[in-house]
Length: 419
Image (cartoon, rainbow, N blue to C red):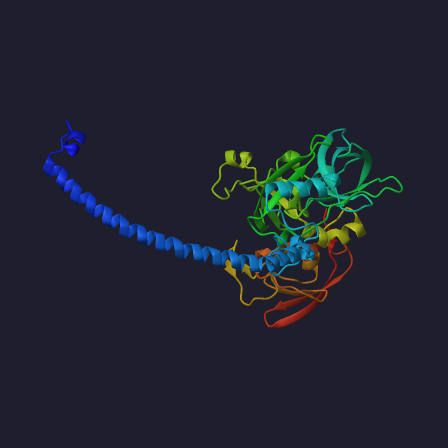
């Protein structure tokens, strides 16, 4: 009765309740067994935790000592982030940037103080604005020769607002490398950038382009290295080029291209053009994409290093010529592959040139120049070879080692200065 009142008005009948009672009894027994198992597990876990805590307490002094030793080690923080197999000394400006903010911080600290805006006045009174950067404490600086060619006066402004006069120190049209000498006041040493090597940068590595096109306020654009050792038509005759996708418009020309460690690896030379002078379409791009492309060419600092002594000796370079058109052994552009893997093939000889006058013929193979072996296996070797041949002194004979068939010839020839 008592149970009936509890379920009064419910849907449960007495038989249903009886079945539920049986189920409840079974559930109660299952619960008891489960409780005993759970209680046993908890007891075992308690012992395990107590043992682990006891071990931790016994190890705490030695672990703390290891932490203290690591923190007190002089290499603990200095070596953080350094790739295996390299040392802190391999990074004079610190470990290469791991974030864009790190990269910009290095540019601001190591490059911006040495970067300047300049105004170059030409003979017709026109003014060219550009960017350059200091490479020597005495004021020797780099920019693009196209900006300073024939300038009658140059005035530079540094990021601190100070300004100085400058003069053209050296340069040439072919590589577009230009050198300025800033007139530094006595007793003043200018902060200079640290030069790196473009070839030590890999495709995909971060590169920043820097310029001061309108005054002392800099522009910094971040991008990546897109190509190294490239030979673009029209501008890759005596130097290979590198391609970056940081901003490199006309207002950025002459500025430095900066690697992640803060070293300058190139001079911003020109925006990327996707068509050559003959109108041939490169990379399948159209004229509209060429104009809108943010990619740009940089002159590798390695080329500057190789030619700097020539600028010091001669100032403005006057290229010379023997009258030879050379071809690599594997001439992909002409679809011709010559026998052997040595020397450079003389493709043609200009009529009336110095080479023509001493009896050098098309089809001969150039093996040496003044004792220096020549090995132009493919087109990549040609810019350095052209520089070597064309930087000789006009009127001063050089000795060539020529292979003609099975015969080896030694021929002296004096180059002439190009107009």
